[in-house]
Image (cartoon, rainbow, N blue to C red; front, side, top):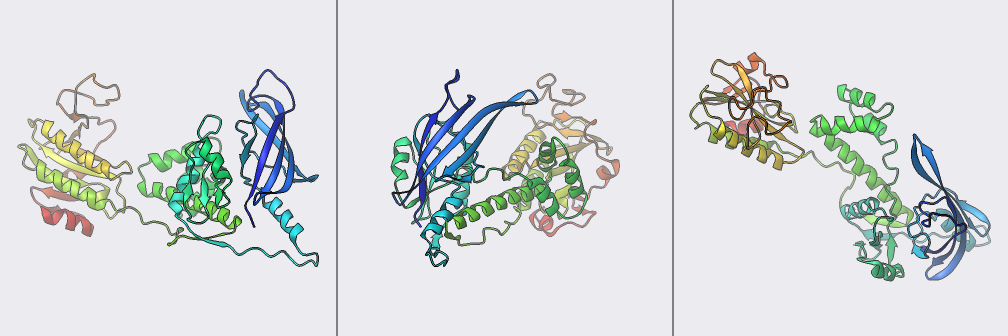
Length: 435
């Protein structure tokens, strides 16, 4: 069956002080001609009633629509934003399932036999290209953009076609080989998603914490704080894939509604493997150890934290360096900034900390991450005695290492290799054997 489209003619039925119907309290009458294959296939009469209401002292907009075809109401739920509503313009129908069913019923044989549905169109598609196109459409506010907010799917090549300007957009509308992409396909996609995501997690403290966080007002903010602010990179990737899967399900359903049998060339619902960044982090540690062990006053270097464990996605790099009391820390700070730069290149907000202890085995603070270090330079600095020893951040109120950990870290790398806990194979292969 040919693609359906409709040509709207929109008229405002009242007069008011606010000329723009998108912001006024007004009634709009729209008339439309349904086109199928360039031929008239039906007529549309509809009204939009726009009004204002207040919630919590803030103004909100409301619009109610009733669409009538040949005296029969077929749709009263469309909440389309009418951009340039006082001018005639052409749009492609997004919700014509009932219209399509009505037309097929009229074409069905009188014998009562069901109408024959045309065979699906096989089309090889790129899921990443489709995702990008739908996300771009969803991000554009038609009332604030002068550019055409529309993209098409080429029904021959499977490629996305996006017009550059209004003139090209008008020209593409008449092409029967192009299918318009509904701009609001991802609308309301987040509804119910938090509960569904939490239910998909394995039973444990993490799931319990999230289940508690999504109750009541402010649920989404608390949820985001835990997923993106807690340093759990694996949880963040789980949520990212969960959102991607829901979008792909919506795309596949839209294609089926358009009678398109998609060929992807791969399983688009197979979860991608977690990114393996351990090797990059371990090589960054190796470079730091090789450069810093030659500095006079550096007595000992050890590896701490999640990188010394089998954790698939470590949060960051944690190193312990024992330094002499009189060692200037400027060169060690430069190496720490270089280490931090390498970890940040791996993505996901990975960081690096170089903890310091004195020859007596006492934790004294961390290496400052700033290139310029001194008292009064930045208000956010929480160093207790900034400037007493340049590049030493003694924010002991925030971070403090246990004396037992300082005395016996799980893996000492220099001046000799001392393994006090079971270490993963990659730590041995990428780091230990090279020292």
